[in-house]
View 1 (cartoon, one colour):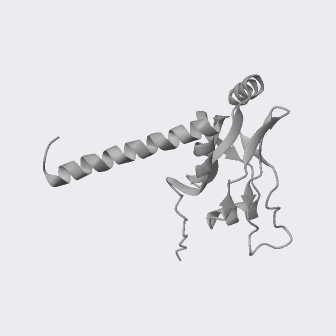
View 2: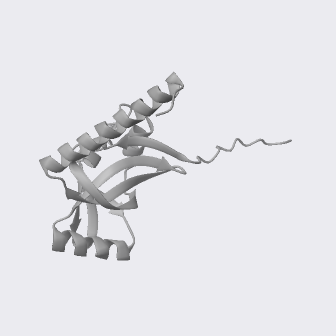
Length: 167
């Protein structure tokens, strides 16, 4: 008599759950960190179907621990009374040295901790956290003008190549 077991394949690679595209527009990114995050079961199930939003999320350092606030993970539809609160604060997992560095930088120079993206990495949920400085409105305009100019240059080069002529 033989018994067969089905073994689930372990997840490999990265799968992005949510990204905060506006953060790169509103902030100047100085440094990034990859953090683990403490979640409950229904939150992970909701994330697997892609139901999260980083729009209003930010991180704070309280009593030597890093907390993610404002992250919205929708309630799991199949959950029962054990379902989670959509906007509760969640603990981020970092090394002690990284936390001490973040404490120093956020206190001294008025920098912010902003989540850039949330993704699955080898089956575990990770958060890309950025140490960032807020941009002024004129900085945003300059960045937009620079991107527009670069886009126009690429188009001009493409048109020149298409015509077959040189400069």
